[in-house]
Image 1: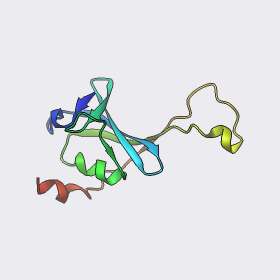
Image 2: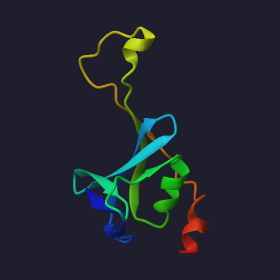
Image 3: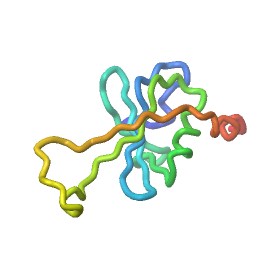
Length: 107
C-alpha cells in the first residue's frame, strides 16, 4: 500500500487502475516500477470514490502514462455463463478529459 500523499507529480506513474468494486464504488491502485500497489488515503485506508471522475481529478497534473477502469465480475454464473478457467478481468482505457484540473488548482 502507498499513501496518495507519497505520490509525486513529477515521478512517472506507469498506470492508474480504477478498480470497480460495486455499482458506484471505486478503489485506486497504481503501477509503479512494475509493481501494483493499493493507494491509501490520509487515514491509511484504501482510497475510494463514488465515481471515476473524482479519481481522475486527483491525478490531474501527475505524470500518468495510462489510466484504466478495471472490472472483474463475480456474477457470471448468475447470468448463465459457464464457469471460467481464467480471469474475466476487463480493463478499459480512460481518456484524460481534464475535468478535474480546476478542482486541483484550488488546493
